Length: 320
Image (cartoon, rainbow, N blue to C red; front, side, top):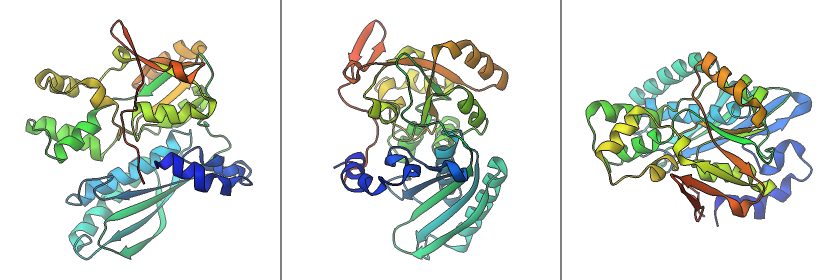
């Protein structure tokens, strides 16, 4: 079974009397009476990152990915907790020093504070990160409206290509290699999206497993569908350069594979001009790429002049 099936069958019923759990249909816990928002994620070597050769970069990816869960809900993170498992080889003094320096830098960048955690001796390198924020309102996951515009932030596909480079499946020039690998380890999460989403978004989610998979998660409870216009997804200039020289790669297999930690959100079409003006004034890259449909079976992608039904979700799903 996959991750969603496991949760639905064995865990969701345990939360029936706990409204704050969001029915395990979202990535955060939210207690409105206490203004408390919490998210937790686990990251395992060879699943979420290929190796531990660059601990300073791995820890940045872990923290940014974790902060993203709150930011995409319109919540500013304040505290984080990290538990780590590893052995004497992975947690050498030089590695621990690199991790400490990286966390110090990230704390200043995102205005968060380390507040606790745990360490365990293990042959498996893994990290669990818990992030806490305070708010009186979140942008819920299953709250889109039929006819809503679908938006994404930033660039998709750069992180996935970075992972292919790390796995030695792609060879590029030194400058392009550095760019894409940095996008894998340091996703471009943006604290300025917190207030923006609270103002304009009906629903939202971050892109961790892939655009189509995460979009489906966002609307699955409502049984809505979606239309995505592929030509409206503008990629980075670096990714364009890559496609020009590597014809065997196609745009769908690159931009739909996740690890971007950009945000998908929906908003009423009356907000179009306001969102355009806001994104220009704040210098935020926000792209309108489609709309919400009434029926799930009508979900499709428009590519050129052709419409394609969604036969499968490109992206990543944990299987058990």
